[in-house]
Structures are given as C-alpha cells and as structure tokens.
Image (cartoon, rainbow, N blue to C red; front, side):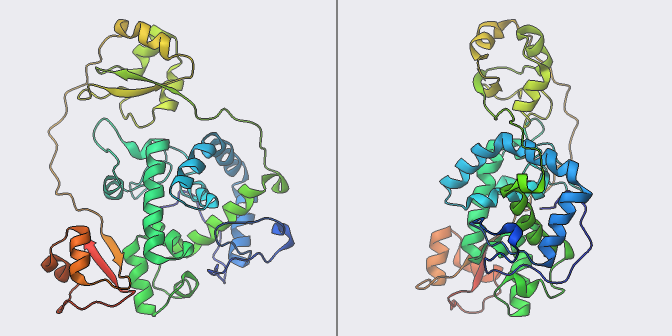
Length: 352
C-alpha cells in the first residue's frame, strides 16, 4: 500500500518495537501501539506540523467524521485503537484517494488484496472506496498481519510493502524486528519511513490541541439505507427528491458511475438521515438510468495475492494442508520443500 504524501528528508535512527516515549512533548499520553519519539518520528511530526500543515489539518477533520465507526470496527477485531491512524498516512481517509500503484480508497487497497479480503471491485462498484466495508477489510488484513509477524511495527511495514517482502527481509537479515531490517537495504526507503510516519500521525492525532490543529466539530458519517431494484443515477434521484447530488456522492463513494449497478436487484443505497421515507415514497418517479454499453474488454488472468502462515507448536504440514484446504503437494511446491518436515516459527506460503 502506497502512502500518498511526499516524505521529509531521511533521518538516521528508526523506531524500535519497544513502546516508549522519549520526549516531554508526549509525556502523559498512553498509546496502545508501539510509539517512540526518536529522530525519525520527530522528523515526521515536524513535517506534518509545518510542510503540509493545512493538508494534515484537513485530514484530521475528515477523519473525525469516520473515527467512531472505524474505532468500533477495529474493536470488533480486537485491534488497538491507535492503529486507526494508519489510514491518515495512507490517504488522509479520503475514499477517492488513488495512488500511482493503482491502490485506492481510505485504506489504499490494491485490487488483488481487496478482492482477497472480500471487497467487490468491478466496472460499477469499487468497495475499496466504501468507508465501512474497506475498514472491515483493513481490520481483517491487519489482524492477519499481526498474527503472522507478532509485532505491530512489522505488521505496519508489511501493510505498506507486502508480507512477502518483509518476510524475505527478516529471513535474509536473520532478524526478528522492524528496527533491525530498517537498518539494512532489504526494504525500501518508503517502508523504512512508513512506520515512523504512523507513529508521528498518532502522536499528533492523539493530542491535536498541543500542536495547534483545529478540531471543530464535524458531522459524523451517518445514513439510512434504501433498497434500489433498478439502476438509478444520483442526479435523477437528486432532481426528484431534493437530496443534494454531492451528499449522495459523499455517502456512496463506492459507486463508480454515480449510479446504482444494473445487475443488482436489491442495492443498498445510502441516503441522509431522515430522508429514507421520502426516497421510498418518490423512488418510482426516478427514471431508470441506461448505462452506455460496455466496451469489449481484454480478459486478464487474475493472480491472487500471496497468503502466508507462521507454523505453530504442534503443526505438521499435513495439519496445515487440512486447515487451509491446500493439497499437500501444492504446499510443498509453493514452499520448495523436499520433505514434509516443518519447524515452529517457519513461514509457509499457503496461496498464490
């Protein structure tokens, strides 16, 4: 996943896995992810607070619209609440954020990873942009990464670079922590800066007043749902019901054509609180939208994202095979195993 902001100059010293605060500026604050205040983190705090201050303030305000929802979802997956600030670094929680690597949405999912975690991505709908569904997918992914690596800095690094790259870096460096691999050339500069950047965003988001960021109240992300049985365009709905077009776009960013999809006979359209009864009453007056015909598209072979598993005490290759419903022969081929013996702590690729 690719962060959408420019980076400050590289500084020596990276965040360690040990939680601790090294500055009175952050004393008294409790974090539930590892946070340090070393030179790398200070550099990013300064960058957010000066170079892109106005932009970061807008990110905080927009994020506050969704924060209660995100924190509730993360709590359901038993994730630390401070981890929600990863989305500030990814996109400023912008549903329409789009990176050069073709990641999109508030959590900047690539297509393959999004589909792996249950998000619908097609010509009409891209649930990577859905604030709720993409957050559920991100929570599941982060939980899997933590279960794989056992440390949040490594899980964060893998969210940015991919678990395969972090696994290879750990193995080549014979390392066990992010701080160790960050001192090597085995991971990219972007990933080295990614973890300190999340720590910096967390420090500011946890105490915005101390850094002088505006925290005026913002409307929360609330809505009602209406079942739509045919394709309807936002502008037509707006013309008939009086609901502002911009409000419909804000509530339904996953709809790529500003219209409900043609093949869905029961699409859940989100509308502003207090308007669902009016929409239901007037919906028959909204003309059916006719989508332009689809161009013939080249069919691409889909390559699913790799999934990994860390061998636990008592595991055998046969048990792993049954657990993930992957043939024993496939497991051996994926992991270049000549025998069925595996060791506790070993990483196994279980899907490609």
